[in-house]
Image (tube, rainbow, N blue to C red; front, side, top):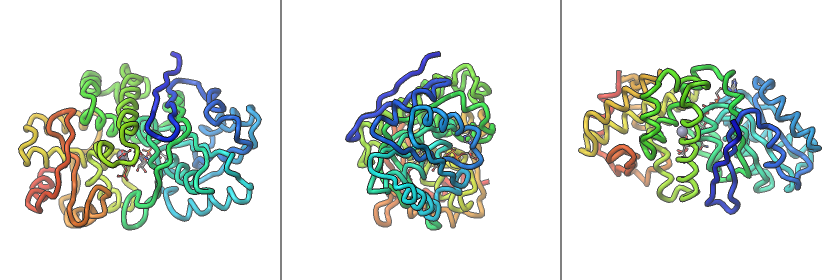
Length: 359
Ligand SMILES: NC(=O)c1ccc[n+]([C@@H]2O[C@H](COP(=O)([O-])OP(=O)(O)OC[C@H]3O[C@@H](n4cnc5c(N)ncnc54)[C@H](O)[C@@H]3O)[C@@H](O)[C@H]2O)c1
Ligand SMILES: O=C(O)C(=O)C[C@@H](O)[C@H](O)[C@H](O)COP(=O)(O)O
Ligand SMILES: [Zn+2]
């Protein structure tokens, strides 16, 4: 099947998300002719996945530096960013050079952050190799690292110059990581594209596999949701907040687990919590909450979390970026495809919603 291009606007320079199989040959076209040097940021553990990327860039004549970083979430630290800056400095990396991030969402968040901050911003091209990276993390220009106080608390908006989603990288992804990415696909369904929910319900088992019947359509639909939203509101001054559905509790869980809990799994639990909040607030009915549980469960995602840590999670939610002062704000639904903001729910409402999630 040929590659598809999904356009993203809203930034100073529009860019494409290219989706296809065996398409690394298109990478030099995204990196562009200005760069002489390219730093390919990737986890050491993903050497085999990164090899054809390095090969395609060398064949195109760039001086290529493999900039290896810790695997997964462990790369999203100030220490890794500092180490990466040192490597760019040692290579005399200039403003016309480019960073290419290859890996999951954690790697592309770090690579994007390094590109955003080196010399106050150099060109960045992202090559996501997880489902989650393709449908969400690599698109939209949010880059960042974690701190002990919370998830993604340090970062910058730095849209990529292009995103290359080579579906041929997905079969080696561990099934649990593939399923984690489905949480963001399902999120796109609940906030903006109900056809995604129908496709998952039609073939839940296929949805969990790269070779599933609806896989390509699910990926392209989820990217299209993300592209539309970030094109309308790059800097999250309004509409973009809907992409945070399930993330207020989700990020608190990730922090409580010291960033060792898969992001998608935490978001899955967070979406059920947000659905319970919306039900208790009279916005959606029982059946819609139940639909969250059944779809997420059908693809192997969690919908409950420990009751004992609720106090800690409630405190951790205070550093959510959507909060304003002491007022928490949650993305909820007024119906499927109708996201809204719930501002300042009282403790009783929060406790009751968690009561339906805590196990
Ligand atoms: N910037 C954004 O808009 C945005 C959006 C959503 C999520 N995120 C971030 O993305 C991160 C989660 O991303 P993730 O779920 O991709 O996790 P991840 O980056 O930690 O990757 C998961 C694992 O998959 C491995 N892997 C990656 N590609 C592989 C492949 N093709 N074959 C075999 N193994 C492979 C990685 O090495 C890692 O061990 C979180 O930090 C989250 O905050 C950012
Ligand atoms: O792109 C966005 O905007 C999102 O909120 C997408 C989320 O899936 C993603 O996890 C993002 O990194 C969360 O951003 P944050 O600003 O809440 O840290
Ligand atoms: Zn997310």
